[in-house]
Length: 198
Image 1 (tube, rainbow, N blue to C red):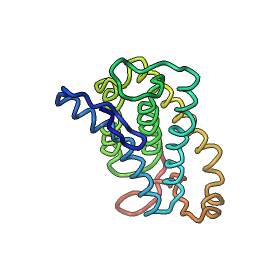
Image 2: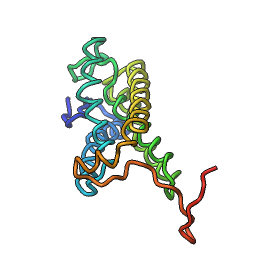
Image 3: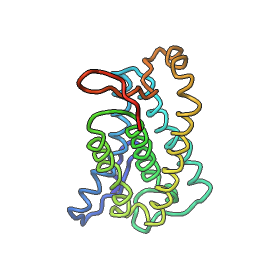
């Protein structure tokens, strides 16, 4: 059967295993991530959240349909999804978002940085596996999607750093958002004194 989830549909087989159930949960994560990003933007109304949210439709609405149309490779036999399978859109979105969030986390002087990075990896990294487990993509298709997602995320991070951050205050003011995209200098926890990064 085809289980419809916006941006995250998947195949559910009649004789499914516990691994299939876990894979189904991970397969639905992109939809949950999109909702979380929208909620973060609405609650904080800040440029950083807007920049990360904009990356998601850039992948799902432009890159995924374009690459699938150009490559036109079918999905594995048994998949209930009808769109082309190369590359995996789930893998592009999940790994792309993971890489973008990791670059954002490690560019900032924030507490529990490793814990937050581990949570991001734990939530998004298994998604390509879930697509193979459910029979909706081949290994080659998720590898291609993961590689493309990584490349796009790195290019987008460079774009934000060199082209958006220098004008972040003006862009935020124009959009009516708070400017939190530019990383702030580090402070000592005890005295609130600025420290120089080595």
